[in-house]
Image (cartoon, rainbow, N blue to C red; front, side, top):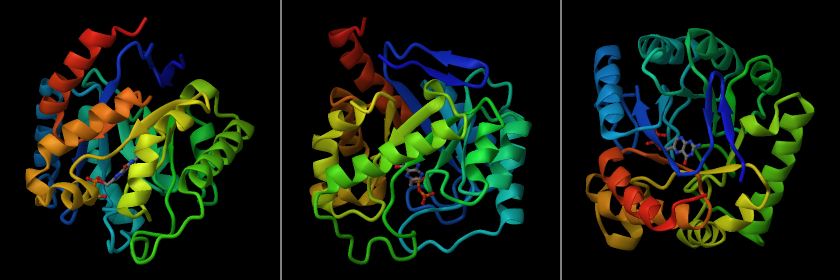
Length: 276
Ligand code: HH2
């Protein structure tokens, strides 16, 4: 079983981890505007900690379909004060960014993980993370947020996403990022139809077979709305079900907004499975 090193933190992964989402944005699809100020974001993060988050993921740029890009300076102003305030909170703080400069600044401010929906493809991104001890989540997406949901197409979504992630693992390792720092994520909803997302969730074990930790982010996403007919604020039960399926199929980190509900569900799963 892979273990995970995030800076000074180590996880044996004998139980799945919960990554709680803190969006310091006015426009995130799931919770837009709720934590847009530094104090509100820090308070939200502390609530997620109390609810049982193992990792906190701080983002300052929405990646919802149609979202406009955010300038470096603005993203910096949104996330760095929150990361600084949480640096000693007792769990790893992750920065959700695609920008190499901010990756380095966030780690200097106290982040122990980088979560890049662009899988370190930006010029300088591999080097930015390699020069730290932070963990890295490499996510797959097709296209960019502005256009990605217009007409996603794959001949074989599971094979193509797996090949992409295997290549990004190899690139990260070639840049000097150790295996124990690498997390992969098929990127649910990032240039994928409902059928693509379901195929990826069903076959998540094929990603676990690549030998690195698998993260799944299904929380509140539109695929759950399509399945249940529910609005974004009413997808807690569907999200918990999706997180459980992901864990059952090999995910060892679930990225969620609804930490308390997910924690209880995973406690039941843990009690039954007790990973050795
Ligand atoms: N999903 C979102 C953002 N970042 N990172 C990873 N690794 N995996 C994901 O599935 C993922 C992600 C989108 O969710 P959210 O942060 O709630 O919304 P927004 O991008 O609108 O801020």
